[in-house]
Amino acid sequence: MASKKHVARLRQGVDAWNQWRRENPKICPDLSRAVLIRASLSGADLRRTNLIDADLSYADLCGAKLAGAKLREAKLRGAELSGADLRRADLRRADLFGANLSGADLAQAHLNGADLNYANLRGTGLREADQTQPGWRSSMTRPEIVLQAGHSGLDHQQEPQHVARA
Image 1 (cartoon, one colour):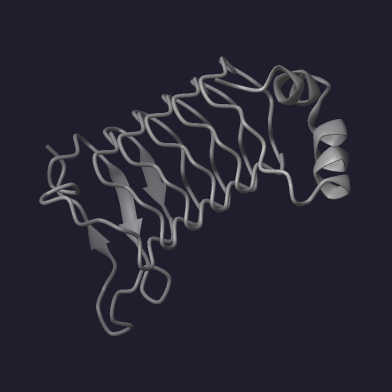
Image 2: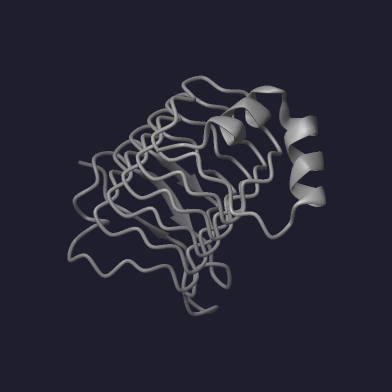
């Protein structure tokens, strides 16, 4: 369950939240199960934050720092995550249906069971992302995905790959 203090701090705005994070770098905030639908969190420092089962549907997380965040089973349906730092984030079984992840860094992220149907993954860095679930890419419905050579672990001499549309 989310810490009431942490949720209250976040509701003060991104600037106040980021200042608090700078002053308390060792704290790993607990926002698990928090309801943050349509929250404006662009540029928020949410590194190492527990967001397990949080509802961030349609939230603005553009450029947010989510490295190492626990987003397992989080609802990120329709969320704006363009340019977000999701390195080493745990996104297992997260609902990213229709999310905009363009330009996001998902290096070493855990994506098993995540719903990426209709997600925009253009220019997304998937280098060393845990994609071990059989067929996770091919099971996506109309993913907007372009894996760029050198950024996604593809051989530099290969052309970018496009996932077939259903």
